[in-house]
Image (cartoon, rainbow, N blue to C red; front, side):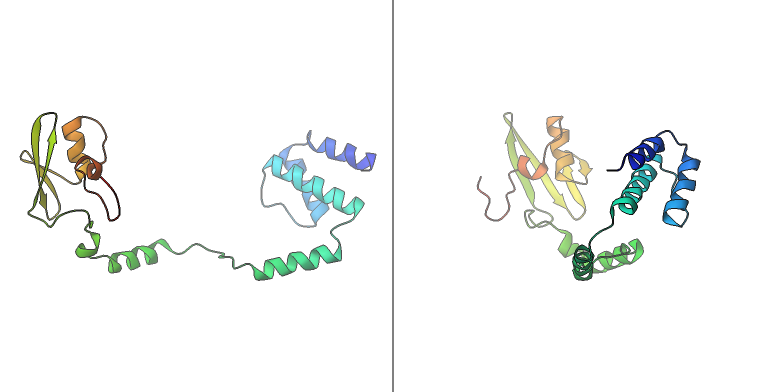
Length: 163
């Protein structure tokens, strides 16, 4: 690399953010949209090197254009309100229930530390010793005193799982 370019790149480190923005506008011909010093230094250094030693070859430019043309890029993320509306419409109470759970009204039983535990499945939660919990994990935590997966604690296994 040319020594003059090296010195100019080294001097970029000592510049303030405003000086870098001015230099960016000189080199690129348009104002910088950011004041991030590290980013400006890297971009200006790249541009100075490209101007001094030559840019990409025509073959490389064509290949980059081909790759960009093939890419299916989403420019904007989906709107949150539309995604939430679609999700609310597609889930019903029957779809939300876990296939590992017995039907509501049934009782789950488990022997734990010499004591038989009984948990009743409710339409929206689980009843254990007169208290209602929103999840089996909350019931398991109330029993054990530590965070425990409720399905594993009550040995409710999915299809294909072994005990």
